[in-house]
Length: 293
Image (tube, rainbow, N blue to C red; front, side, top):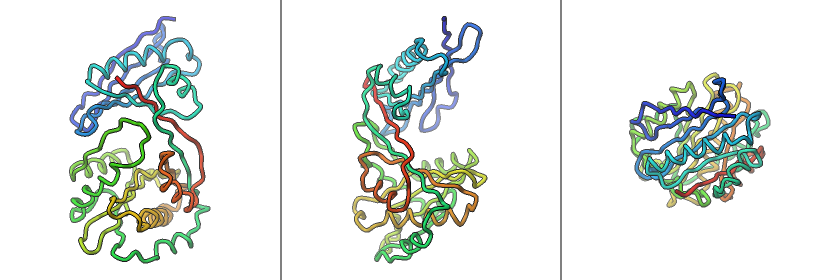
């Protein structure tokens, strides 16, 4: 079967990334597959592109995925990328396809879910109420308040050394404008952003944070976006403390919310142990592949 590949482009190239898109269609014009290439543009990640490729199940094993992969890789080279990464569910057709195409598996992510109905509220309140000398918790909804914005942006470097396996992920460079833009992007999707942070009392600076995004109608499942503690403040139980408050706030603010979803790198044993202790239950795994250009 003859397949037509139509290229589309994202007209907005002013942000942290832009997208290139290809649509595969059969002779009758019916869509049979697609490829999206996210090209990172900001300092620290401007060597990287992220691929999301799909072929209709009924059309697989006919070369469509290979054609889409070829055009996406060629475009990544044209964009001066060094690496292309792609994430798929472990054991899926995409997993087998990327491995067969010679991409290298660089990371395994473990997914877990906390049922808010089953969450032990008393145990969570006990964790939150336990003193952490020299620190206190703050929380906000949506965009960070102006008086906390600078130290919140600075605290984002806590994610620089998060376990990422062998992924050539680079470093996300944060400033106040980027923090605010990220919050605005969540709001533009109609979702709600909730943040809990730990403040060092002696300096009044944020030294750790955890973020949770909830559907706009407060139902379904929320998603943890990131939890980080600056290296010089680790070992004080701040991540567990913040996450416990985040769960309690989700229960109180959104009584219709079903659960909270978390994904953690296989090598991040510390965060996985925190999630396990808070009652998160494993759901599935995904794997990340990388092509070095």
